[in-house]
Image (cartoon, rainbow, N blue to C red; front, top):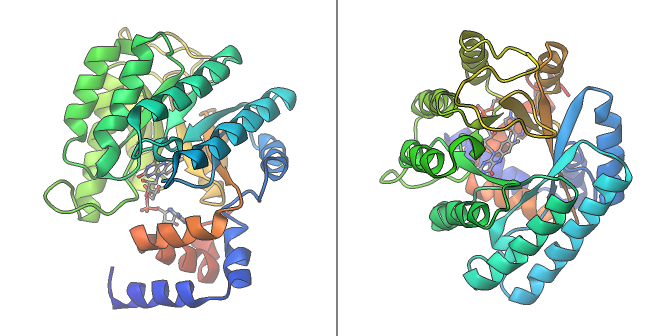
Length: 324
Ligand code: FAD
């Protein structure tokens, strides 16, 4: 991030709340679940499915976890009531992971059971390096308990990711179910890659590694070289928009999922690319964040990764680079 980028972050952070709200409207579905349902109903017509995120993350007291427990129950009810093709994305720290691991496990187990009763999958979003291992451990522990409707996210910028793929696939076999992304948190050089091309190369090689391992792969990127690499890998495996996953080592077919893979994108970002993929027959999933904490969420993203500010500035002043 150069001087101009840092300048844009400072400007964005000084903007009055109503101006930030006008920008956030594109990326956040609204304040409550009814807003999120309306957005999902509208975008269902574009052939997309969804993953719903209640905004908010690291809590400072365990009492705050109750808000997320109750709100995610409301999301499950809404998905069922409105017959939406949607699953959940949750942040383990919002369930207390950094305060009391045992209670956080109980909170998440309860939600997973409730989701499993409705045949709904739960994705554990990956947060910063403090919780990488413990987030993976939750997934492994839940699978051991028979709760297989859960998978995590891995971040290609982290140097450990290839080893994580290996060990998760060894333990879960074909039940391994990943979202793979670059990683939004800027981590230090001793644990992470920092250059754009290095991160793209790592992401591409992780996608290949996951497909080779027979895992289910959610490719979470708007970056064209990554999407092109994925399409070429799918083509080589005969997985292009087919109804069944032809890989011999693939896991069981999963309800509400594509044949071994899906493309995942954020609400408001590169809709034209997503619609094109959907038209070609690929499963596309949109990440739908909603909640009262939209302002705090937007500001935290800017602090963690100023590139986000540049994407937003670009989408305002050069809308052709990021069409809805
Ligand atoms: P980039 O090169 O950053 O983006 C390509 C183009 O897409 C940009 O030029 C721009 O036009 C557009 N674009 C990308 N991001 C934005 C944005 N925020 N606003 C506006 N335009 C944008 N990271 C984690 O660390 N943990 C997670 O659990 C996680 N979950 C994710 C779930 C989904 C569905 C997606 C799509 C991303 C997730 N991420 C997560 C974020 C991810 O790690 C990247 O930071 C983010 O996707 C940007 O990388 P990119 O590959 O899209 O490529």
